[in-house]
Length: 86
Image 1 (cartoon, rainbow, N blue to C red):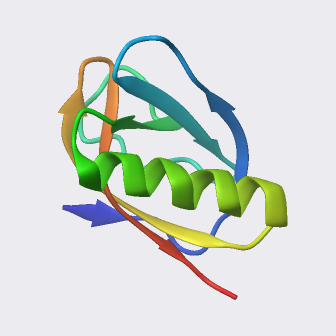
Image 2 (image 1 turned 180 degrees about the horizontal axis):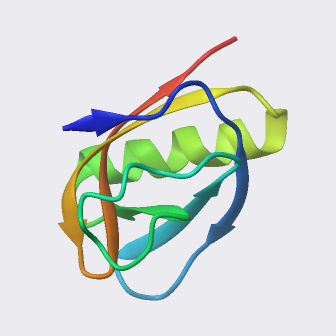
């Protein structure tokens, strides 16, 4: 598991599937995935839904976050923790 330093959410790409792309100001640890300009959140679980909610809050308020990733979820790192700072 790797993490970023504090960074900001710059964009959220949301789809009809259960995976959403969250883009950050800083690069994400690559985890040997194809892309490291975003982390993916799987919202098929309650925890994933909560992380998406935190990401939306961070985007709309401009508050910094730390992203922890573990492995790939398809083509980009899988977000497993999203810490919101005040």
